[in-house]
Image (cartoon, rainbow, N blue to C red; front, side):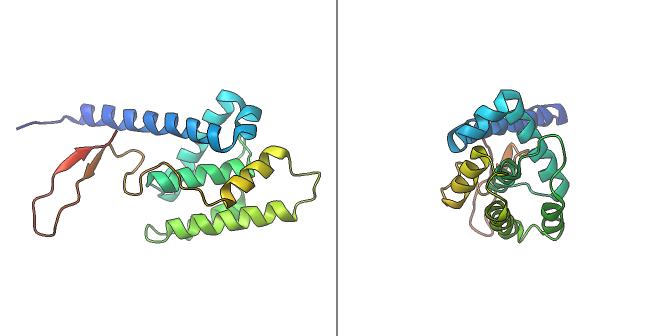
Length: 168
């Protein structure tokens, strides 16, 4: 029988997070080129780390939901400070069952706030982010997998033994 130690699982978890961060950097570069150029490599990494911290704080675990949260943080874009209070209020009301809907609600609220902002306040990178988020493009992240979860259960019929697979 194969045994995996806690240290090995921690290593798998760290690799999973690093892999997510690398995919997220590429995704943000493709989806928000102006924003990525404005922030630079370190700024994009800081935005992703801020998003991961916010996701952990609010119990957001699915890759696609964490991706959406990071995209929203890019839209409101404030690397130094925490998330805006209106975002925190909505996320505090979220449950695991409705987190995706809450993130979509936040997307609509963020776009509305950007539209209501005076023209001189909105920079081109924010406009680009708002347009990209409203396009409804699919995200290249897993619906089931958690960001820090290197091991996900394989789908199995009820009553059958479950296997485990490692996500890449």
